[in-house]
Image 1 (cartoon, rainbow, N blue to C red):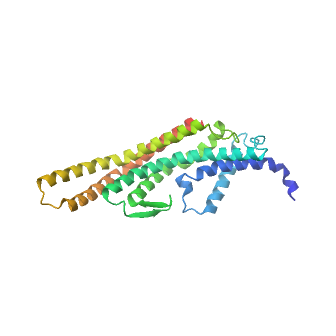
Image 2 (image 1 turned 180 degrees about the vertical axis):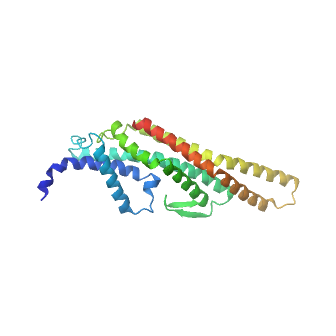
Image 3 (image 1 turned 90 degrees about the horizontal axis):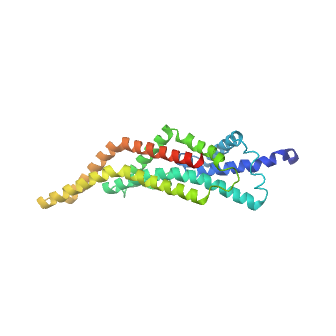
Length: 261
């Protein structure tokens, strides 16, 4: 019964390589890797998108036949496809992580870092402020069409890195990941800096009051002041967090366009 499927055998390996490159992206991009989505749904979505890419990218169906003729060649090709997908996913996940890092710094100064909730997106504990920052970044990501840009990056990556070629050069991937980490810390600084400056001014004011009015219990006053300042800065900074997410993701997409053509 399998003899009728013999003409399809040369197409199976290219399809699997496309699927592995796509699954590497799905492993880290927050929109696709959210653990609240059932695994079978993500698998069916990955198969459907891989089938579409397999059909529209020129030369994919006939590629990688010679390089994957042996088992070692197939293993190297699969590893190379995974590294490309993982690189794209890690670069985007670093931006989300940077925004959450800035929100975590604000939570620490407000005294809310001990009150944590389970975050299903990252399968870890996080504060409420961090989750608010994450959802703002995710809504911004979807509003600017980031999910489509990620899939475009996967499609155009086949022009820069042919199927079965073994992936990008190590120095290229290292530079890309270092650049994404730099963008992550830059986003964290932009999110946290206005609130940290306000906390510094509040702490300095409490210190001056302690010197002039030592009879006051400034410990309780300082905690309440930090909470009030924190909530005010979070309320004022919600729009700014969306702007930071917008700028960081656009910069990431430009970097992906430069790397992958």
